[in-house]
Amino acid sequence: MTTAAPGGLPAAAPPTGTSRWAGRSELLVALGLLVVAVVVLREAVGLRGAQTRGVVGPEAVPFVVGAMLVVCSVALAADVLRGGRGEAEGGEDVDLRHPSDWRTVLMLVAAFGTNIVLVDPLGWVISGSLLFWGCTVALGSRHWVRDPLIAVSLSLATFYGFAIGLGVNLPAGVLTGIL
Image (tube, rainbow, N blue to C red; front, side, top):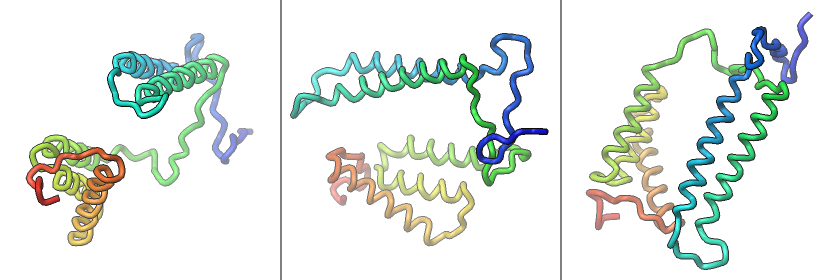
């Protein structure tokens, strides 16, 4: 008789290896979190000279994020060493028996790469529009009129949202003076 874990999934079987470290691959995730935490904290030490309007300036946020990453990595490592295991992937609407769709992945990588290359010379509105439209095409949408209009709308909304709402100017590129 098999027991079911919460959510109706079969309970994970205990590790079958004889090694003490068998079934402990989650420790690599904890180690990765710790490495990211160290990098964030190291970079936070170098942040100086930002304009502050109050007692707590922008230098505090990376220290808080780094500390939270350290706490998460230590908690995850402790849980794994005490026998905790991640839940088995249910797959939701994904059939795990089929291989990855590398064509879609490569098209998404191409859309992001195009954005990286074109954001400075053409500006965010054009490169962001290409990014959003390329992602819709890569993910299977074939609405050739609607998708580019939505992509341009999203790019303009984020451009002005950053400029007006956050005070961060994204590159205007060839549209400098028009936007």
